[in-house]
Amino acid sequence: MPEIPPVPSAWHFPAHPTSVRRARRAVAEALSPDLWSHLGDNLGLLASELVTNAIRYGARPEDDDLVELVLWAADGHYWLAVSDPGTGTHKPALAHPHADSETGRGLLLVDHLATAWTVRPRPIRGTSVIAGLPLQ
Image (cartoon, rainbow, N blue to C red; front, side, top):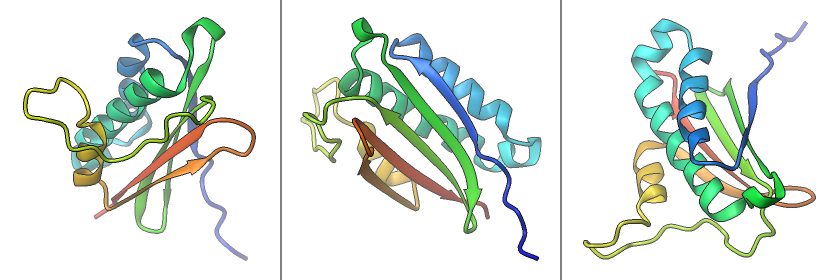
């Protein structure tokens, strides 16, 4: 009989800057202490960056949009997916901002930390950014 995988942890947050801290805390609380000591800082940082981008570029707080965060283990990695309900007018992409720019480094950080990451359209509306860190 095949091993049944655990159910992923999932949360919905309002498209508001205070949700970034809540998302980071949710990830911390979902990990066991031994995983937190190994992956916690990087998973928390990935959650912060991706939720910030989803709020800034993909959601509309005036429409009560929600940002979704899903965390799961598979294939020797911990995966984090952050989805926004945006209309697709701004697809996440790596940028190379000027040294004095105050924004534009989030996906550079994701690219540096994650073993793999991708951007996927959601079936009806919105975008998901998925990033993985190795369990080892």
